[in-house]
Image 1 (cartoon, rainbow, N blue to C red):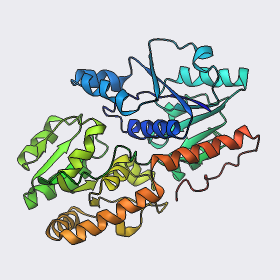
Image 2 (image 1 turned 45 degrees about the vertical axis):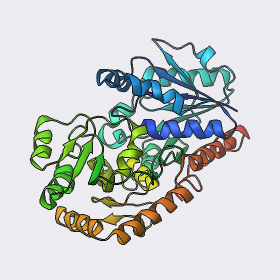
Image 3 (image 1 turned 60 degrees about the horizontal axis):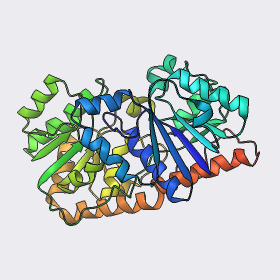
Length: 375
């Protein structure tokens, strides 16, 4: 089967955690024997910012990490007749321009020769619904939503009549333990500051506990304002700047633990959707302490990470894990086992292919959660 994927960015993960999962799915589709072609705009904001941040080498390294995946960068308008020639399955990610989303839908209506799905991995449905409302999904067979609550929003607002819960997952070809790496410090956190969507949470659940315990800690990410950088320096936290996704496993291996701090829209309005780092850190075998987050779809057993509800509880949880290596190792092992059993990009690629087969076989697809997608 020929799979054509339209991403805002494949080669760049700068402030673009979606790329980690999208890359992994492309890898696994190819490994399962399918032809995979990815289109990304040359002027995509993630790619341009990565270049400004000195990331040319990292961008070039990506193609070598995903052999067999045909990545095509385009300038201006795409020739859709050429891009979609012979396509069997087409996925359009929601960070594409509305004009492109609409044009691909119109092409599907005119030709009717491929399964077309829209893929949403963001919180705009609750924080900026007017932006998603601009997308014309006529011609699309359905929507892939990275959480059940998001799937329900699409159906309730009438943006689609067919939607499937399709969670993110870990690309275990990249994310895994590094037993040869000796931990060098206590804590690492990899994530971006964002648009003040978790500024208070990062101060309460990350910066303050690290300062109180005087931990040896490093934070990687982008878009940190001056006041946040100053608070980190005062807490004795090293700031490492942008860390390309393929270097994250080594960063996890060099630390004894990490934390999960979801953005406020997910914690408050989109329960059941963890950050991509939850899957990836678990795959790497590093114990996790999570700030308040509702695992509404029971993705992870309670034994796979430590949950806290306040900064004080976070401080005590970090202290407990750092003082008891057996306890930390048990949590990490159970977490990795859960990811390997249920939450890899190979799992998601197979789920995607099953969804596509429903349409290819002419079977009406019910607007219900995809069986197994949240298992």
